[in-house]
Image (cartoon, rainbow, N blue to C red):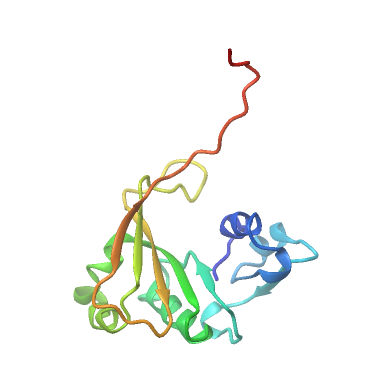
Length: 168
């Protein structure tokens, strides 16, 4: 959901066959960059999208409509079956400061994620610098309602760079 130019889809496709993946984004130009015969793509608003998905992984928009990220998570939970996962890349304050601005805290108490994986480093969404906000993955399993979420720090692993040097 909100697949943009496909950064998350590309990582998932290394582990999951493209026939099992689908992407949706509002912007057609992003989807045009993703064209692949085995990848199902939808152009449109995720919040108006209907369907049935085993799991949903997303980087929801943070701006625009009021409380859009919350609406994305809530809608994703409606689209997965009991036991299905919803994984959302969110700003860490999203999990703690929603009551004052958006009334989200009461929803979070009733729909607590099972796990939150705070990213060790701030991601760059533009390939350049980053903003001053910390991010993490919220992981919900539909039908499971813990009293509190497990909190983890997710290490950012660098891919090994092949070397031409021979070790002795």
